[in-house]
Amino acid sequence: MYGGSLVALVTPMQPTGGIDYPAWSRLLEFHLANGTSGIVVAGSTGESATVRDDELGELLKQARRVIGRRMALIANTGTSDTASSSERARIFSAAEYDVDALLVASPAYVRPTQEGLFRHFSAVAQSSRVPVLLYNVPSRTAVDLLLAKQVTVAGSPDPASHHRLSTDLIVRATTAAPSAPSRRATKASATRSDRAQQTAASRQRGGGG
Image 1 (cartoon, rainbow, N blue to C red):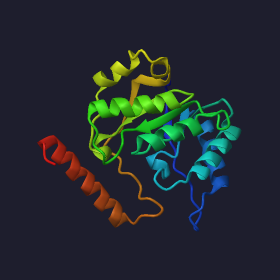
Image 2: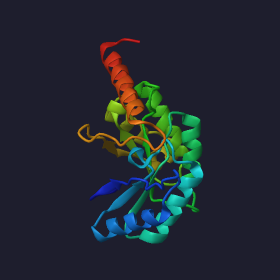
Image 3: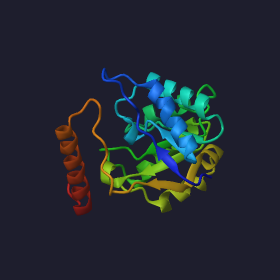
């Protein structure tokens, strides 16, 4: 479905904490000039935890105005809550935002079973008008998304799940590059969050609660 370089862009900020939209346009132009195949807007690299829905909407609209059809436009819309993830999928897959796909990560901190992940992603897919890319990042979410279970989704009798859920493209995060601290979190608090997630992952592997 997608190939080449798909880049999760940073979200440029002003000193006041607002989004720097002129810098956003320059960043988009840079990626156009350097052959990027597609961009992910407001991923974890782009402050997904702190970008408001209205800000995400404006970032997407401005991105489409700048890039046209020269790059794929992918919106990160997942949360740890199935209901809100489905609602955001419905909203941001609408023609108003003109995205090519949505990126949805496994719910963080919840540690769902594979059946729970199946139900979560199926609900999101049924709410979306565009393909949904599954983002697997177990070091951050404390749960691993197994391909075998998600292939079952592609074989589902529900046409919405079959056509809208991209089960053969699971984006797996690398553990080499550290993520940048949030604009509304200190470096220390980000480190504490990382340690908490690592502890949760260790407990899961060891069967602890």
